[in-house]
Amino acid sequence: MAKGLFLTLEGGDGSGKSTQLSLLVAWLDGLGHSVVTTREPGGTDLGKELREIVLHSRGHITPKSEALIYAADRAHHIATKVRPAIDAGKIVVQDRYVDSSIAYQGVARDLGADQVRDISMWATEGLLPDLTILLDIDERVGRERLDSSRTRFDRLESEEQEFHARVRAAYLAAAKAEPERFLVVDATLPVDELAAAIRSRVSSLLT
Image (cartoon, rainbow, N blue to C red; front, side, top):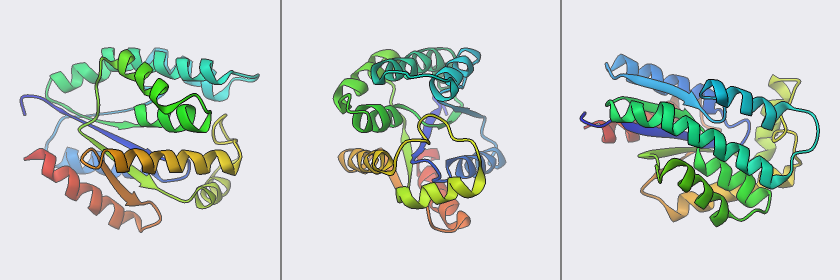
């Protein structure tokens, strides 16, 4: 490929993004592709510091401050890691991107989806994924998964059920508005079925 691909995984907390990302990367590696795996926030050294602030620091962070911290991480991350990899012909597989900010800060935090999207588009010079894989899950099921797998929750995971219901609705609205960019999969399906559905769609981008 003269130019690489940019693939992102999105979904509510407990949707299984990490598992599917690992399976997708292993499959792409097996095909011989050069793959860069990353996440937001936290995909760079600066991003790790910003991730600690926005997700794990004690004390209140205002919604606008939260959104701007994510945008700052995204601007640095795209400029220093993601875009150079794509330009070098690599496949970038990323856990969360612009759609997370739109869902969590724009909609669930009531900052406005368009405003948050505009900030991210300015920060990234308009970079959008070739494919966004949305692992859709009912917020109650996602919470049950988190409760059974961990004892510590970050700032966003700790929000009430209504917050996460709004996040899910925002994701589904985004997928409906841009069906050519999104692949929506039922995150409650068996892991291997989900992986097969994702591989099938990604395969069409590799030819």
